[in-house]
Image 1: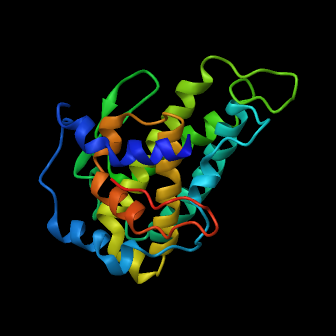
Image 2 (image 1 turned 30 degrees about the horizontal axis):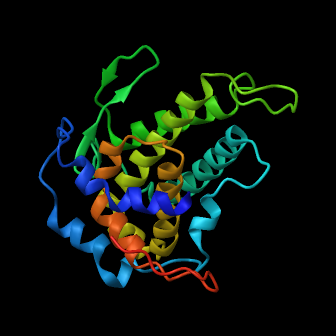
Length: 235
């Protein structure tokens, strides 16, 4: 199943060709595109472990528990990376929340949309994610309690918000990431995150298609897992 996730990621271009463009889409910034796609940086990783193995649902583990555990872990890692570049992400530098050449508005719990700066968006996202992950009714910690039907939509919301934050880091602060020599961490986290989302259908294909070039470049530059006995994947 995890290898199907790779196929999904590499196949989004064909799938999304007939999709309508997202509202707010603006012209790409060639400098940003070339920088994060530069072979010197795109191949950087902190580990050569087979990330696909980290995505697969372990035998005997409840899927909802697996999703909740990974959501918490991804949130912590994204928070650490965003915190590292937060001094560059100010209202003055990032007056709107942009990621992958798309401007995102914040939607509150009543469905009302509002424009906000990137640091405001990040703060709102952190508040919501923490609230959802610590809600005992939504994410039960007691063995006898089952996950409610509202759990999956909530988890999808968490991953969507984290995807926006990762996209903002790549498209607005990649120079800062390079300056801090954090690009191996960002690349590893992003690839793991996207493969996980594809495997468990946590993000809309239209949104994932926004970062298709980077995703494809990262997958193609990934080292073949050691002693895996499988052939390198092809697009």
